[in-house]
Length: 352
Ligand code: UDP
Image (tube, rainbow, N blue to C red; front, side):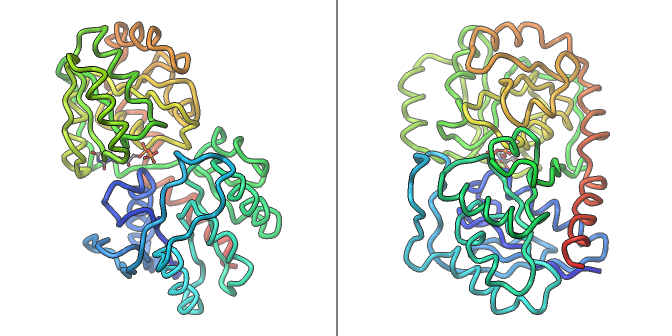
C-alpha cells in the first residue's frame, strides 16, 4: 500500500473546468488507486470538494494559465499564491508520504524538486509552452531520472527530454459513459473555449454543412468567445454550458460526431475518449494526442490541420463509421484498470 500526496493544478478548484482535462485525470487516478487500497490525499485550491476523496483545501490566488502566453514569458507567481501555499503544505507533511505527485504545469514544483526529501513524480499535462518551464523540466528530467510522466509520444516530442518521459496515456471510468447507438443530426464540440482550441473552425464547418453544432465547456477567454458570436451571427450553434461528466456524456452521446479543431499540440485530448465511450466518432486535426487515439476510418477521421474544407468532407462521410467500434475501442484501450496498472507500477518504482 502506498501513501500518495497529489498536488492538483493551481489554475482553479477541482471541477471548475479551468484546469481542463487534468481535473478529470486527477479524480480518475485517485479513485482507481484508492480502490486498490492505496491512501490518497489531494491538495487543491479552496472549493475542491469531491465526495469520497480526501482533499486538503488551500486558499490563495490562482496561477494564470500559460497556454496563451508567449514562449519567452518569465515565471509569474501572484502574491499569496495558491501554488506556493499548496507546496508549503506539501513540504510540511512530506514525511508522512511515500511519494508526492505533481499535476501542475508550473515552474515552482519543478524548481522545488531537489529541496524535498520525499520523491516527486511529475505528470505533465501539456506540450512545451514556455522557455522557462522547458528549462526547469529538462533539469528535473536529467537529475531525477524516471520522475516525469506524459500522456502521449506526440506530447513528449515537444520537449528536448522526450526520451526521458514515461508515456502513460489516459483513461476514463467507462461505466459512467452510456453507449448511444442512435445520434441526433448534430455536431458536438467540447473543450475550454480558448484560442488554442480553434472553435471557430468547427463553427465554420457547421455553417457550411448546414448542421447544428452544440458547444460545451468552460468559457476561459471571454473576448475570444464574443468574437465568435460577432463573426458568425447567423450560424446555428448553441452553447450548452459547462457540464458535469454525468450530463456531458448524455449530451455527447446525442452527437453524430465530435469535432476536435485544436491549433496547438494537444497533449492527449480527454474529450476524444469520452466521445468514443459514448459511441461517438471523432474527427480531429492530425496534430498531437488525438493522432494516437483515433483509428482513421474506423473510429473517426484524422484530417489535415486547419483545413475547414477537409473537416466538411469528413463530416459528410461520418456515417461510414460504426458507432459500436468507437465504444469498443474506448473499452479496450482507455479503461481505468490498465491505466491504474501503469501508474501503480510507476509509483512503486519511484517510492522504492
Ligand atoms: N469538460 C467537462 N464539462 C464540459 C466540457 C468539458 O467536464 O462541459 C471536461 C472534459 O470532461 C475533459 C476536459 O473538460 O476532461 C477537457 O480536457 P481535454 O483533455 O480535452 O483538454 P484540455 O482542456 O486539458 O486542453
